[in-house]
Length: 246
Length: 214
Image (cartoon, rainbow over all chains, first blue to last red; front, top):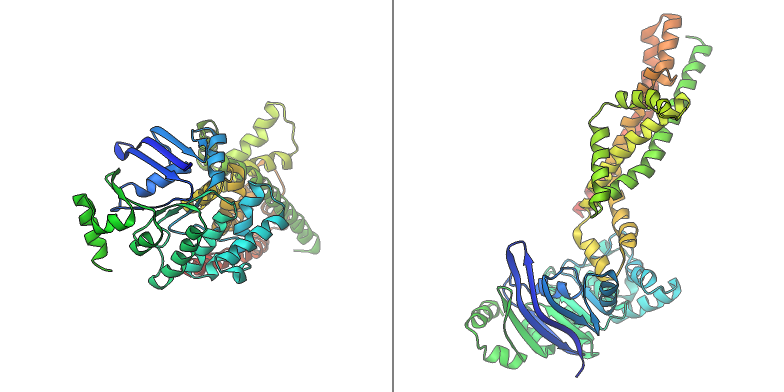
C-alpha cells in the first residue's frame, strides 16, 4: 500500500517545551487515523506540522511524495494536497459561503470563477448545505459552518484531510451532522487524520487509533483492540475518563 | 460682517477641505504601506515603519509643518505652501493611520490567516482577500476619529502663512474688529464639518459592537 503521509523522527519545541518527541507515523493512502489524548499532549501540533502551520526542529515529513522543507515551493506543494478543518471553523466572515469556497481554487488552482463555482456547488451539495450558498457564515449554525469548512477544504480536491477537533466547539445537537459528513467522506476513501475525542466515530471509521501523551505516541492499534484491551496504563486512565460519560 | 468677508471665509473653508482631502487620501495610501511594513516578518521593513510611526506620533504636527515648509526647500524641493503643507499632513496621517491599521490587522483572529495558509493562499492574497477587509471594518471608527482630528489639525497650516479657514478668520477679524462674531462663524463651520463625522464614527462603532455581540 502506498503511503500518503510519512513522518519520521519528528522533534518539535515551543521554546524550551518539548512538544513532539520522536514521532514516527506512516499513513497509507485511504487510511483513517484517529488521534486522541489529553489536552497538551501534542496531537494538534502533530497534524499542524503536516501542512507546515507549525515548523519542526528536526525529522522528515513527506506528503503524497512531496518532501516538506521550509521552501515556499515545498510548502505550497504539500498544502495543495492536504485540506484542513479547524476547531473554530475559521470561515472568512466577510465572504459568503460560496465565496469562501471559491477563493482558494481561483487563487491557487487558477480556476475560472464559473469552474470554481461549479466545484463549490458540488461539494456544498455533498455536505448537504447547497441551499445556503449565498448566506454569510454568521447566518449559519455551528454545525452548518463546520460543514461549509469541510466543503471549502474539499474544493481544493485534496488527497488527504486533517481534522483538528472538528466537533469540540459545537453544541451537542450539532455534533452528529458534522460526524455524519466525516463518515461519508471516509466511506468515499479519503485519507484522514482526525484529532477527536468522539470515540463512537473512532470505532465506526478509524483503521487505527493513536493515543498520545506528553508529545509521544504511547499506543496505537485498530479500534476494536484499542478500546477492548488498551495496553498502556495511561491509555486506560484516559479512556476511563472520557468513556465514563458515554 | 458683509458678504465679502463671508466669501473670504468660505474660500478658507474650501482650502481646509482641500488640505484634509489631500492629507487623508495620501494618508490612506501611505498609511497602508506603513501598516503592511509594520506587520511584516522582515525587520528591514518593520523597523523603519516603527521609527516612522514613532517620529510622527512623538512630535507636534506644528513642528512637522515647519520642517516641511522650511526644510523641504533646503534639500531642493521648492514646493508651494500648499504642497509643503500637503506633504506634512500626508506624512502625519500615514503614521497615525498606519498605527491604527496595524492594530486592526493584528486584531483579526489568527485562525483566519491559518485557514488561508492551509488553503495554500500566499501572503498577498492572505492579506488582501482575507485579513485586510476584516481589519478595515474593525478600524473604521478609529479611522473616522482620526479624520476629524486631521480636519481640525489643518488649522495649524496657518502658522506657515497658509490661508485656510482659521487663518482666514484671523484676517477677517483683524479687518472688521469683530473677533467674537468672526470666530463664532469659523467655529460653527468647523463644527458643521466635524460633528457629522463624529456621529458617523459613533454609529459605526455601535453597529460593530452589535455585530460582535451577535
